[in-house]
Length: 453
Image (cartoon, rainbow, N blue to C red; front, top):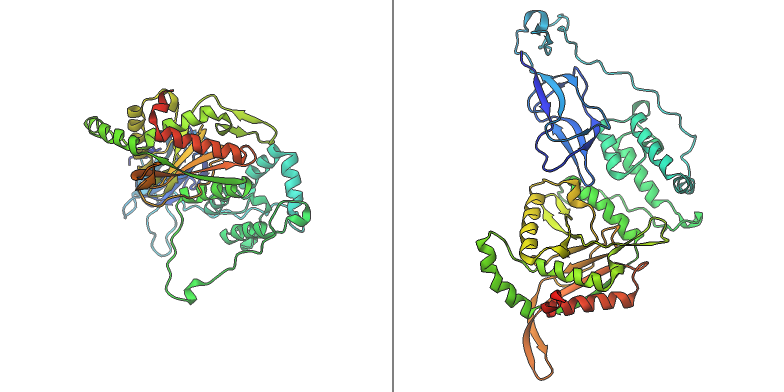
């Protein structure tokens, strides 16, 4: 009987991705497409599925290993069709057990026997207060992180619950299980998060809002409903967006740019771009204009240090762009925008967008951004408030351009106006700087000759 080698499939440009969960063990029977291990990049998690049904013979990876495309994960023995081959082996390889008749003994490879549940880790009589947790985290962040990883290793929870807790950033050592033998259930993790979010913090010297928890509503009482799980990208990005919104003091400045001449120039270049298979959009001009504005005001091309005491000013210009994919928004980063021409940027934008929508997301594609652009021009709408993509300190939101009459000093003339919205971190950028930035950006887009200055 041949042994099937299960390898990491084509996962795009991912390399050295850590294994965060091993969902099977030797002797387990698995169906085709059943998840075997879980990999986690900076922005998403993914399962490696079984290519065929069989019995796990040998594992070649463990939690913490880093793998790339083609790496051997495990070996599978195809299941034997009844009747079972005598002796239960072929070529020295143990066969999967066949359905047994009444009173018959198991085949030579026994089904895995459920291990006795490990004793629960010692727990304090009462969960520690949030203030205590915050003091411990602030005084020993490395120890806290190590403790959280230990919690994943020792917690009495299933792989799916562990993965759910990891996605939410929950330390399982702090979750009291309500399942059999104190097993931590998915509901326990959810209830822990709800209780921590609802816990009053202001009374303990923290900065919480002391808001009551959201009501738990049975919507089915009012009419038919369906439940649709969030995609992994939305779960991960949602947690980051929530953190950024509540921890960064956002200010959003609105303005408009007259892009009448810019659009005329762009349309002239569209046909030439088509011959090269390039989609030449206004995003290319936005990228170049943003670089000019960042040079003018370097505080926007910066990040606040973790202790909030210093501003890290960047000497490079890597710009992120929000891409709408079937699973949610991702923000790949275009590097060295200042060193690339308009056509080169248009080509790279098309390639990156296609790769993101195909799910081929490499960790390097999402790292190192200085400033982000979120363009809703193709969908409609005018001004909005984009959420800052920390650790960046600003983001540009772009609405749909519209032609309308504008007074030129003598008469109303039709002009194409582009709505712009800049959100910035008020700890780093004050209102006057924000107003100057968006006004200057608007002037660059209005007269694209400024791009060469």
